[in-house]
Length: 370
Image (cartoon, rainbow, N blue to C red; front, side, top):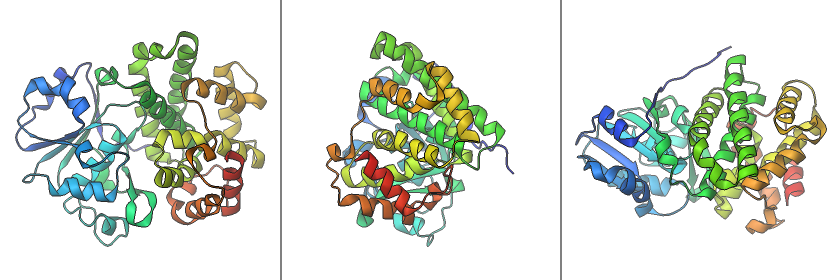
């Protein structure tokens, strides 16, 4: 059994200036980012490379259509793709490091081989994706009305660069959704049957950092996150290392139909499913790793294991109030198709469930959250 694989070199700089000097960016590079990130942090450096702003190609989460539109505007044949942004930017950039990108669906369908042709540098600007150290990219496949992840060796970054300065302007809502996403990464990877003792070190340390930070925010207000931004950024990467090896599971799988159909942000759609899935696991099995996990979280929350998910949800609601599915516009008639989509299209994720779940189980969970 593989204990741990880490393909990216992780670099850490306190400022963007230090990063730019060390990277030695040239005209042969391409930066993919957002204007609201590039302007305040990088415009002053007058970088010589092409810069593409993702928002000029549409709002919301990344899609196959957006990927193809941006790819057509890439000039020349850049040697290095530098992704500076959140999950949308990072997932898109992973495709642009490939030799052939269009049509994107051919990559998903296994018709076109994903061959890496360019170096990939990832600089996360949120504290949740963890994608800087994984080989997974998730797109909305618009023609198929679904969100789906693609996990291939070519998507590993050559360098993952952590710059806490970039979190200084992170809006509180994005902080909330991204950091809860990282918490879900850590929990799901800890419970995965593919987890090893080494990956669990990263899972549990991420959980400790995130919950500890949330407790401080509960006590001192949302601005208490700013002195903790380095902790949250490191926790996100730790969780990324863990789920990059052990995988995510039913929470992510069940969030995808909600995100694809109702355009709910990824971290928020994960939170909508999170405690529902955990309670479903507990109804089916209470021993093994979930017992260890519950005791660990209960200790952090100063509560008992029988109340751990109630207390955890109370804490998370301080960061991001949880909403029932119907408040997103979900119709009760959607739930069966959601459950079918999870059972049919998300085996890459559901194979990592702590306990096996069937289509009827997913429907039951959706109904409990409706």
